[in-house]
Image 1 (cartoon, rainbow, N blue to C red):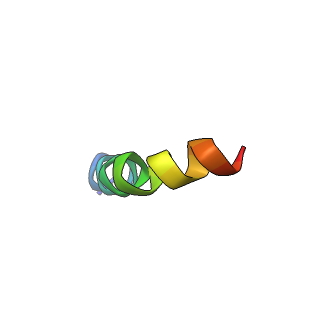
Image 2: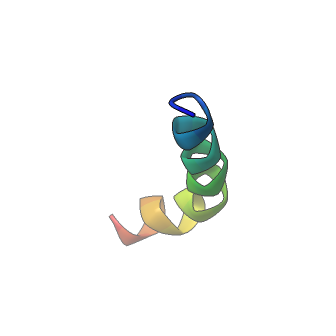
Image 3: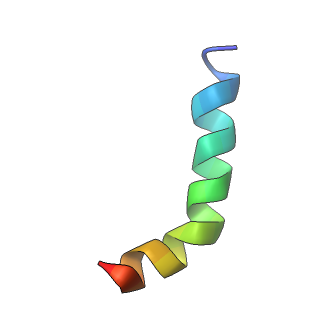
Length: 24
């Protein structure tokens, strides 16, 4: 579970990361 949480967040971060990086 501990690995699943960061792993899933990482995958979502990569997708939304582009928007997150641009927002920053």
